[in-house]
Length: 430
Ligand code: EPZ
Image (cartoon, rainbow, N blue to C red):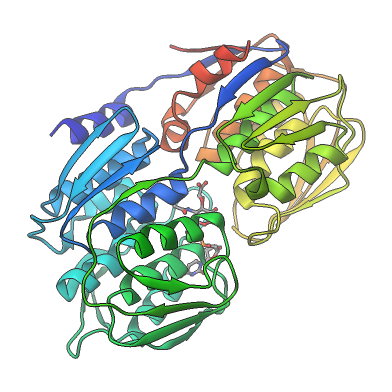
């Protein structure tokens, strides 16, 4: 019951952040575990009917959402100090209620795992979310090619596998991260070979493949466009360390650059940040990679990067678009943003304009004309990465910024006010 209370408490608890800007960030911080790696791996713990131990698991409301679903399904979950222990031995349900589906957009990732473990599953269509409709057509088409029958029963879809799951050739029309993950999880215990072409190549896909292969799966090619999965009969529980969160790392670097600061970030994988680091360097920042750390030095005033075009990995990540836009708001010059992944991912522009930014949005394009300075304002977050953007802007703004909508932030950033305070920022949750 603790987790249900925990997540409800965060939703109901109308906290806000207060940021006093223009404090140069300095010092060093460690990067949290990846939300977008933890969520599919948590779903995959259903496969083994055994106990898995996940280290470096971030303490986020989206993780609590997954824990609530696992517990509802009959799993035993303990989570303390970044280590999550999940035993799916007691799985006794295969239906996820609307209330738990609504709590978290990406709960569709449980579908493949439930089908592989129990042969049937039902859940409601996950609602759209702030950044646009979140269709699941690619998930359903791919799973049906593995032998899943899907019946839409007035918004609840009921799935079963009358002839079992069997390997197939699956060509994704778009390298969807979630669809790739759902297929990997479901096909890992299908009869025969599955080949996914045009697969997503994000580092979180590789981390999921590493977890599944440790459990005894036989997956090759993760991180490339074609993934081959040889189905196996059973999987076992394992201990796995979740990769660092590349988007949180990008957000902290953008916050530093917004203050002309100099920080060292530890416990990250620099190669996961390739496209983002080149934008920072184009902005005049000095990036020194030292093993699993980055020493980052930013100029007093940034030069505007010419164009930021979001693309599937290894292109520039859509999740970093908002924090980077906030950072460029005060730069010298103009930046063209092209958001190719989601339909409505400029919700943070309103708050940035309130703080004095000069940004024009036209469809999937936004033009950010750097201004000399930003000023604090009372702003409201409308989505997870938009909340992060408003913090980045607040750190670089004169005076006080008050941020409402912190519940969005808690979905993906673990205690960000403490991390920023440890780097010399003046950020308080009230
Ligand atoms: C994952 O979402 C991430 N979430 C997102 O991070 C991230 O922005 C996204 O991948 C792209 O990198 C998690 O991993 C939990 P997609 P996902 O399927 O899997 C369309 C964050 O801020 N699409 O790659 O939902 C879809 O509408 C979150 O941490 C279909 O049309 O992303 C979108 O336009 C936000 N049909 C595009 O593809 C489908 O069946 C990319 O979606 C599936 C997706």
